[in-house]
Length: 208
Image (tube, rainbow, N blue to C red; front, side, top):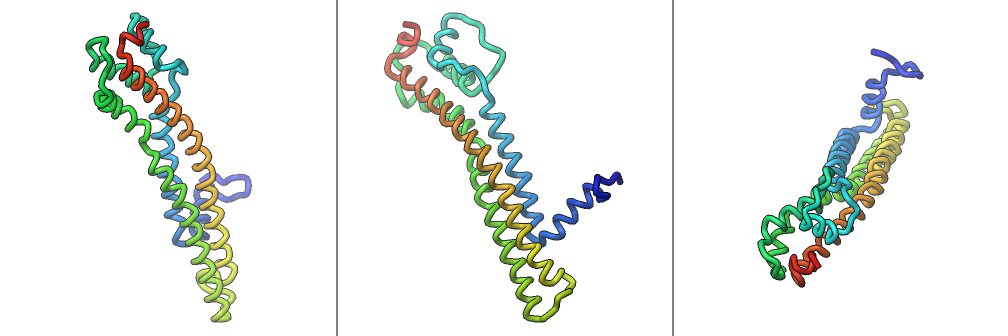
């Protein structure tokens, strides 16, 4: 196995990190994988499309303009609207809620999981901190400086490492998650604007 600059194989370094962190580290590793998987789902659901106003986009569609190749949530919502609305009369709000419900649900995909993992990771790190301190105090009580678990040094190392790992998972996840939440809110606003115009004026008002 190829070693890195310090002479330690990368895989061995990862195993060493997990071993030094104690029983909590595998759970923190799982949190990392799940968090970035959920962020990936959010990113795909919120993939950027046209920044054009949704009413303007619908007007172009009604005028026979070609659809752009880039697909997004709003474009899918416009497809659903045009498939359901058959005349120019105002559309009841209940119908608009039903038509746009799948788009709103798609925008929320992965949000709860991201927020849950961002909250869980620091708590799991804190649990590792408590476990490491217990090991430290146990070693002090037994006056055993070198035990199988690493004694005082091992307990303190476990406590600090798991705290650091929990924060290292949560902080980037929180930042990226907030950015995606902001984009989600903008898209929800676009869909609400579309529903409001169609409920009040119908397609006739969009064409005007």
